[in-house]
Image 1 (cartoon, rainbow, N blue to C red):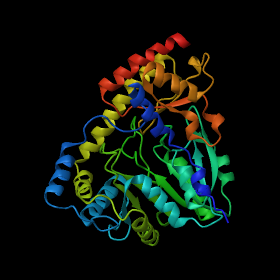
Image 2 (cartoon, one colour; image 1 turned 90 degrees about the vertical axis):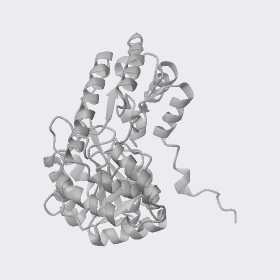
Image 3 (cartoon, one colour; image 1 turned 120 degrees about the vertical axis):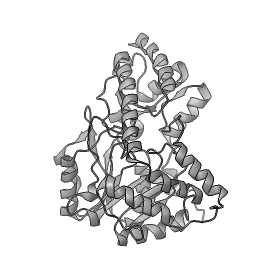
Image 4 (spheres, one colour; image 1 turned 45 degrees about the horizontal axis):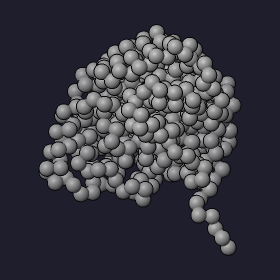
Length: 391
């Protein structure tokens, strides 16, 4: 019997559009506003801590689920930032980035026939994660201009087969920060249908205009049914370090730790030691981070609006989902527009449809990221001003 070479799962996947646009950026010498990686230095304190850890020969395997020092620092951070008292011995798992954290959680929770609710647009890994884990995704739209969900549509997605809901807050790609009232609505549905809430909170410290970041695990009745995913990448500007975190009750954490062990064994030991330093930075670092990103957002969004894009400024994270309808001209859709930007103007973005299963919903959007130095953003803005000729 002749067996197919590739699995049906693998055949369903395509190259990451985000990473693909970064390749295009390098090819055409473009300013890369596609992939969410800062082009400015990480804090000196944590770089020094990483170097010291290597010099001190912390170069062998750490405890699979995370070094004790890092887990204790994460617990301290969760206490003051999220309002959660977390046991570092039983409720924290350190992973190879938040990307691994998400797939580990789903692989540990999902059985055949289980459904997982995803909002769309969604971060591009979530749907493949569901495929790998064997979950059936159900999509609930969040709509512009405010990118919020309709409570009735969300409620209609829950049923007896629903195992989990995945919510990115602050949201990638839209920049929405879900309010306490919105999260209370989600929480009520999770309690009603006995559903696990998996929240990707990697942008937890990037919240603007005095808004509050609310962790759904801290709401009444949600601690035992919540999985909180985050990591170092965005808060400390070290996307290449791949140190992620999962906060969850002991029973789920035990399963996550076993799954993580067989998927990757563990995150880099010296970078975990640096992570302990990072999570214990003064609180002024975290408030200053939010303020600096808000200043970037304000400058960049003001320029995009002036040029002719249409959007509501993001409430958090560091992305802008921008409607480019004013510039379509002879360009039929978001993919053609993104190609025009990177190849002709030298600015890389992400086509909006890549964040949707229903591709037509994203055809008039591109996503920009603004986690860049002022000089980088200024260069991109200058190049984008040529778009006026297409209007």
